[in-house]
Image 1 (cartoon, rainbow, N blue to C red):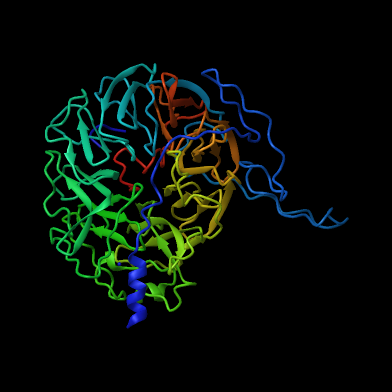
Image 2 (cartoon, rainbow, N blue to C red):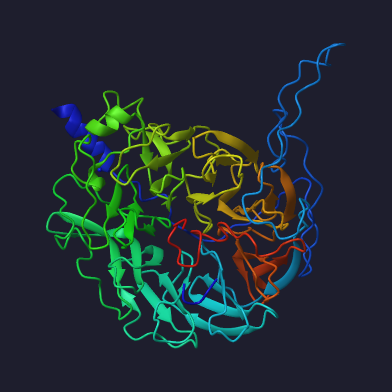
Length: 590
């Protein structure tokens, strides 16, 4: 990358919908265990032995975790003279410019083991950038209590920055202060935001303090002045004047952007029908959705509502079909007519969203020149007495209306695991994160790839057609936070890369799938794996991207981050190469 880059029944319904469930993501102590897995490439390096032999198939006859979807049931041998089965579908068409490669994707090979002390990892995808423009690329790991910077070519430690507590969200890297050379680095730790320049010096005015805990951080020009601002979302709403706020915005002087926080400042125009509560896991996307040149702020939250504001703090108006005048009053019931009126006749059976852990995206998925808002949320009944209804992917317009084909969200209803933390282990619930890219040029528009609560990766077209699923686990103690997307064989067709994690040691892996959902490689990760989306980037300047994995465990002086080389890769197509899509962490597809 470049360096300069919403009657009684009605009242009861509203009351139920406003209740948040902020106990899902807590974090705790340590835990460990041992388990085997199936057909993997051995993890090599640091003296870790290969995993034990694979277990037998599950008792129900399904395949072991990670072997993809089970085959359909067989009715016995094909009768003589019967026509042969249809051929498999053709491989996806190239959606990027090829760079002289082929369909063969080399197996990731461990290249570097980046070491430091005992600090453990959370949800922070690593950042890879040449911070000071000296030709040496750095790898930035943001962990509990510490930011560590290593050289990308040798793995030598460059420096570290101590912070006030764990760093939940990925570090932001960009030209935040154009008057200074190189790129700046920003992180959110507990209630503070820190910013350093390319030399490691703290930017004047930082750290700034908001409300604990800041689990979402992104950069964008929200006021149209040509400079980037930092926007954060807290788990703990600010209350004043009958309103609540979760969004903070700061200039690079450390001063708050005028009008923020928007509700308690009176900027938003919200009345009694704005229902705000905390955001618990990277609940933030920034992007201009109305063409005014200013980034708008999308912040799903721990209920069935979404904070959505213009860059000046005004809450975005809801379309007149909705009972509430502003976006934070739109209740995301699956049934479109119920969502418009804001209540369901039968709260026990009606489905609604819950956006506790929703990491959203902004993208023009159908190519009409207008950006849509994409949110993957958990599903519960409207009475909130049944929360294990899987996940749903929402595509909505900036006025809250739903495009043709998306008048109900795509619902992956099966539940295996992912809603809850593994208490006492510091291993947390799954991020509901959608990654967006063109993975098949033959399918109109962009595709959306996400991890369900069913142990599967799902790929959807812009027309809401499920293109494929891939089962990465049948174990309720194995999760994944989301996928990165990049071409790893220089043929112009992206691959899907993700890591799994578990409270139990020995169950986690790095996966590489092709664009049709076929497993290409599966490599065992040490200990409890990685809770962060991998980062795919050139770490040593040879224009061949590596896969960078931020490990959950902080094994003292042993390993914190792993770097894998992929011999077949070139840097021709990095579609969604890191958590939140890019180093500004804005979830925006440009």
